[in-house]
Image (cartoon, rainbow, N blue to C red; front, top):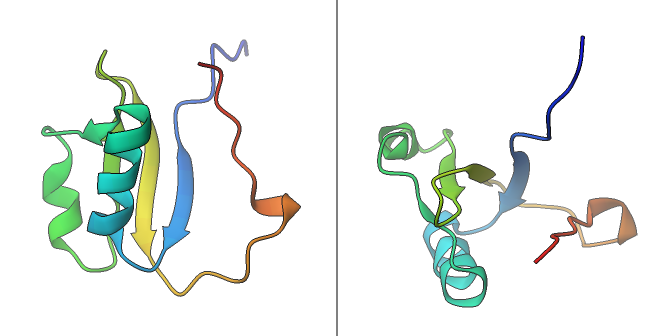
Length: 77
């Protein structure tokens, strides 16, 4: 099996909509309209995609642990 790329990353955030606004303002990620129905479930993800429509982040509403280096996501811009 050959892996092409990482498809997306799950992230736990306290407020999915607030986090999505930050990622949109800073990195240009937008909610994926084709998958936004999943965010209607409070336990489901709000999936963000790049301007090219590639899914990159699935935001889950959770009370995340304190940030540490093990929870880092790096982007190539």
